Length: 154
Image (tube, rainbow, N blue to C red; front, side, top):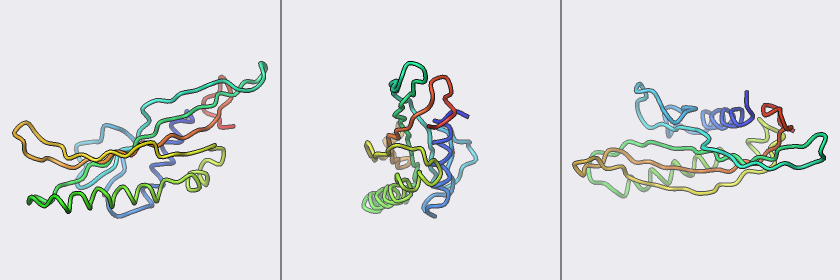
């Protein structure tokens, strides 16, 4: 299993343990249609890498982008303040669960973790009706693998 996939699955495990604010955590950007209630999606949307070390055994130092996207139901009345509060509460729970220290308990070789950005939106349909709220937290996780062995953390 690629190290990036192991990282994604570790984030999913930490989020499953974290909070009752969501019903499901999917390890994909394409959840099944059976998901009911508020849920999170976890995926990697790419990574940058560079070689370090000697010519005989170069390491690939990688910086993976790990996205945590939350889809949240709306209250059904024009209560925009509660939507903002709900998005902030979910962001807080995600940021509390996904820390460098927490991920290192699952992947000790992890070099660093940083929250790169947070975005919050209300998704509007073609008739200008609000459909759901969406929150997006993007983390950058740095780790290293041996060149030619992308599944092995070093």
